[in-house]
Image (cartoon, rainbow, N blue to C red; front, side, top):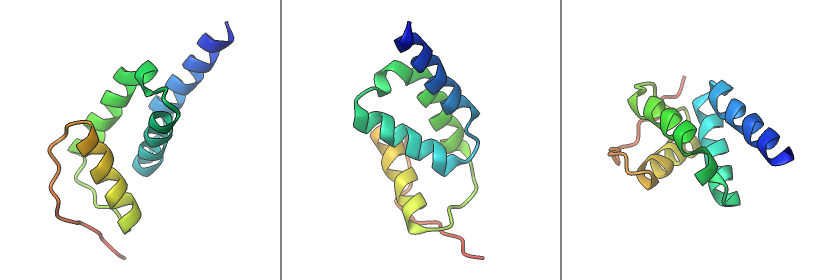
Length: 86
């Protein structure tokens, strides 16, 4: 059905997106739309990888987005801001 087709497309989008900020924005959008529960395992895998990442974020937006979403999902995230500007 069309619903299953769209679900597969979103699952593929979650797993194929390699840029962490884009993953966080996608997760945030799915939550705002109220459909994130359909993709709990994919979201958990993405957030596990993001939480283990040691790379810094280059602006306040991406740092705050990472902090908020990880905290909302129960991850222990330091409140310290790590922004690296080149």
